[in-house]
Image (cartoon, rainbow, N blue to C red):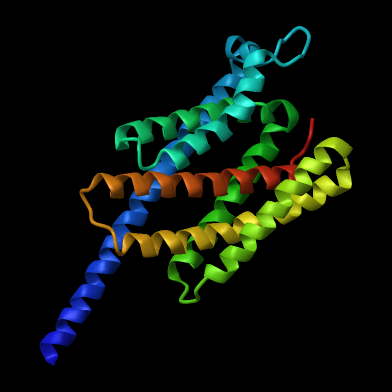
Length: 240
C-alpha cells in the first residue's frame, strides 16, 4: 500500500515537472516571436527605405506590400493550424517565426498612428496583464473549460461585430468591441495557459509531435498577447 502511494506521488511529481518544462518551452518560443515582431515593427517604422515598401512617403498611400502583410498573418495561422499533422517540426517552426516577422511589418503602422510613449506604455500594461493572467491560469485549481467556451463564443460575436463595423464605421461600436476584446483575450490567456499545463502533463518529450505542440501553444499565447495589446492601444493609445 505504501509502495502504491509512493508511486502515485512520484507520478504526480513527474507530471508536474513535465508540465512545467512544456509550458516553459512554449513561453520561450512565444517570447522569441514577440522579440522578432517588435524588432521588425520598429525597423520598418523607423527606416525610410523599409517604410517606403509599405507606404509611399510622398503620397502617404499604402503600397501593394502593405495589403499583403495585413492579410498574410491570417494565412500563416491557417497554414500552421491545418498543416499541423502534415508539416514537419522545422517547417512549422520556420512558418511560425516568419509569421512573427510579417506580423511585425503589419504592426509597424501603429508608429504612424500612436505616439511612441503610448505604444511603449500600452505594451508594458499588456505585458503586466498577460503575465498576471498566465500565473492565474497556471496556478488556479478552478476548471476554466466552461469559461473558455464562453470566451470563444464572445470572440466569434466580436469578430462578427468587427466585420459589421467595418462597413458602418461607428466609433462607439469600435470602442465597445475594443473593451470586449480586452476582456476576452485577458480571459483566454488564463484559459490557454491552463490548457497547455494539462497538455504538458501528458506529453512524451523528445517526439516531433510534442515539439510541434510547443509551437502551437506558443502561437496561441502569442496571438492572445498581440490582440490584448492592440485592443488596449485602441482604447488608451494617444493618437498623433
